[in-house]
Image 1: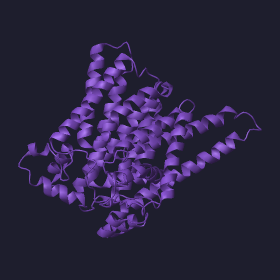
Image 2 (image 1 turned 90 degrees about the vertical axis):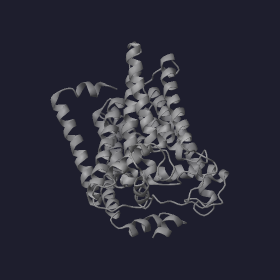
Image 3 (image 1 turned 135 degrees about the vertical axis):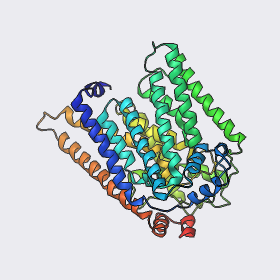
Image 4 (image 1 turned 45 degrees about the vertical axis):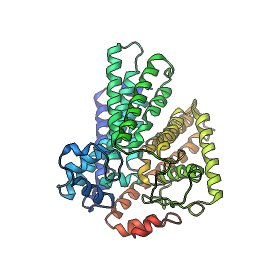
Length: 436
């Protein structure tokens, strides 16, 4: 797994890698540029009004405008409140670029190939589902959480790299991992899934997840998460089964949310793989209207198929299984399997899960290449033709997502069209309709 990295230590390879990384960042800047003067939108106004009441920086360390414990988000808005709008977007874009680099560096380490790491970063950062995060200042904490999460996972991987490393080094790396985890969680709640991702990452690298050192590292991360939840509760921001969300009908029951949870997962999964006509960020959900009983049943079947795919591919195509598991683990906090009334559906809920889907797609392409090469010398074999055709179609389809990203970015300059585009994705989008 590390052979590609060893080969990349020579100057020509490093130069190619650097050119590719810079090219990706320039592409993102080009795609986001149409939105650099978009005025404040929706949540932005609430956050600006909220932080304007602060008397000092110390007031940032509490709940945000929506009573969520996101002190880092308060810090961002408090620091930017008097800046011109272009500088707001420039800072948001800079954080998004840092998130892209963080995903690249983490995957480069985990998968041992800068080429595949670049493909994953490209797939993730240019997906049309990322537009809200790259454009909307209210989502800057998501990009920042990705940076901090990647740092947490990176140092966690280092702490378990060598069982014979000194205890002081392991403790130091584990402490850094825990620190970045706490910062990620105070930026965005979905980061509570990170301890699970750490276990998954160790399993991918075939480490002993039940060894003494591993259990200690997991316990530290788990303790940090429990401490974060306790602090969050102290400030009055808690998850509650009785919570209310304007995106849901007021009379929706908890059991209805649980039954709908696989459908919410499916909508996010299909939005990432087939974004045309599915992008939404102001979603609404009415029981029995937004999804039929047949659609809900089909979503449970799809989830069972996805779990079966993970089981069958873990040994032969580990990147695919790893990516799908990453998607499920990082989707869980907002999935409503525990009916906390999160969501229901939004492109920015794919910021974390989308990394896993990009890994799964790259793993599928890698497996196809391997299958094609095994009998490439056999003139009677149709493998190269079949695999090549599939790879071409997949690559062409994902390349089409890049101009779609640009079109979606441009849509943010026309709020009415933006809200109407959400209204057209599926029935009963009352939230978007009220804004339009």
